[in-house]
Image 1: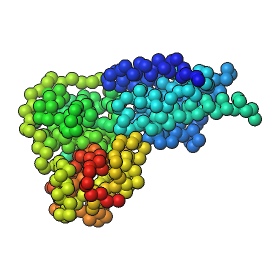
Image 2 (image 1 turned 90 degrees about the vertical axis):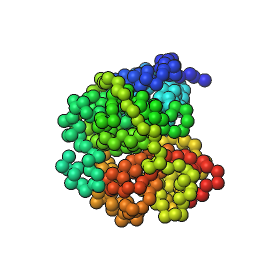
Image 3 (image 1 turned 120 degrees about the vertical axis):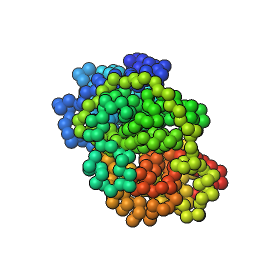
Image 4 (image 1 turned 30 degrees about the vertical axis):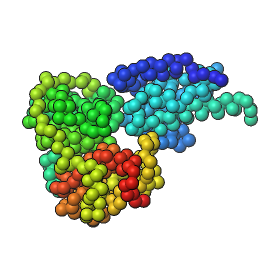
Length: 150
Length: 287
């Protein structure tokens, strides 16, 4: 049974020991590094199949195939106040892009609650889990396609 | 401000415009306070000079399900550098939802010099006005607050129970799905533990956000609000009104609208709301 990528687990551990203020500062630092999906991958209007369901920040996820068989993840967050979604997208991109697909597929979506802590209880939990769900689903799709070539 | 004055509100002075706030950023008699649902927004950028009052960390008792007490309020007031004479201007995310909640809690301590910035964070941002990350500090003040007065704008479960059937008008400001009992939490929000779904018998359903214009978060005009609350729902200014939602935050927005914009003198917020009612043994429920 594969484990999530080490870099991802490291980030989760950092958040697990952060207090409320540290957590907020870390999340804002991540959100500041957000870069929207490049035009070579997608342009508006973004296709519905990349739209994360139940995300109040209107997030989209894409997976780009890299030559080594891994995936590079891209995101768009249409709500300008969707800082949590942007921070989460950066965490997922920085720790999962280019990692073995088996490890990406092993990422537990409820890690959201370790990263966002109690702050998520009133809001965004479902949407953020939806973003992680879509990322791991892309990894599982590619793995399944490898096993049964068309 | 002229535009706000033209909307026909009973107490238009309780709202200030983004323009007015922009002109009073350095006014020592004014304290601008941001209150949000999302804890990331204020630290990521706020109106220059604005302080944050957080609903969870500042306004709630850390242990009991209740608001801060007099000593807690005095400490909070000192931290944000206000006196009873300071005009506090609240603004925030989600159509000023949490700003109205903070405003309501401040009224439990009788802080009359309070305003809401119409449109909140959304309008300020859409107008391209400045947001800064620098967190200001103000010299601590000494604020002597009265004891919290829960009798005028707040109501508790047992009193709500006694009022049922007496002609009191209950306004359930949750979503239609929560009101009908189809679901026990807000759409798209996590399940937060209520054993029974439905609403308090006789309650009308007016989702809170109907009072705001979604494109810029401003309040609807008095005529538009009357069309909703009076023509459609049959409320009138001389009614005794109780607003509730899930934990009392969305209903503080409706309390603000009915009290200040439509001038209803007798509106209370039942902050125990559905998380208390829907978990209480033996209380009547309607679906």
